[in-house]
Image 1: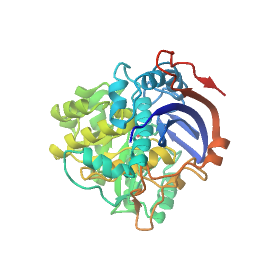
Image 2: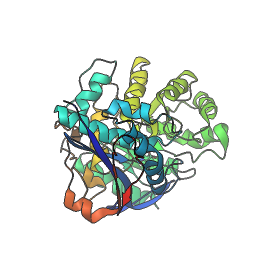
Image 3: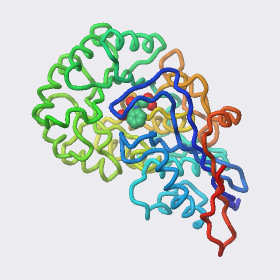
Length: 394
Ligand code: NPG
């Protein structure tokens, strides 16, 4: 059926978190996110840009993404009459960077396209993958624990998630306290999958010092050490990987499938965190996944404290066969009491079911959206010949 694009709505939301969550990028007490609604004659679709409120994890941030969306990305999509998820990245190729915005817009187009076709996102992504494998029906859940003031507080928080069924924890680490923290968690849960995430905190000392500082973790069987050095320091990570027996995983450094290939090639990592927002889209993430699968490099799906929209899309992505390690896949209630979409639910067996409904497979809670929206702008597709950049803000 011919699908006419009617317009795109941008909605900035601020969804309260159950508890503050801290990382090197800052402390979130609410999840400010930019959402996009694409409206077609056949129905609509929703997407989420994972950018944080501040440019502290990557250069993107919510208000910047909103500005780039209104001024450049949305007009380009409207002018190009884009009608499918796969047409979004080519239409936005002229924009440098802004990967999380691109991924959020692609998500909305995929959701609309797949809802109209009655097909779940997981099935679509599996068909786009070169592995030829069907998606899993459920994926192991994993929880990311924010920075804690003390080891006691950390162990109590890990206990609360292990009791709920989580099988893997990711602990945020900083130089100094990492050995004691990881040792305490390992002592209490000998069989738990533990990953640690440094978000670049070991950069100041360089690779040789990082290898020394991280050495105590070797005794505790961590599945990987994520992003010890800075995003741009691929060679530093390659150097570190030769100095330590710990598996090095990259996150912030990887912003394209080609970059994933390069990082593997130069030995900068032996584990890959695949985050669709950072890579510029779910279809680019499938390419990164295929590269890891072809090279037999363990991969896992990273999260960014997304609302139910991004969370559902991440579960679909994580259902691909090359995701061999549990990722940042948690139920909505890990972060939110009330969400704008979903919920994505943790099963008592420590897994999350892959949404089986069409598109993202989660429904928008319109009342919650109304409560949490802090800015909205509607951008209609104007008849050919008229400029398509006149958004109406409310
Ligand atoms: O479970 O959604 C989640 C959060 C996982 O720790 C997590 N993400 O550095 O990988 C990260 C971190 C992050 C969160 C990064 C928010 C950027 C924004």
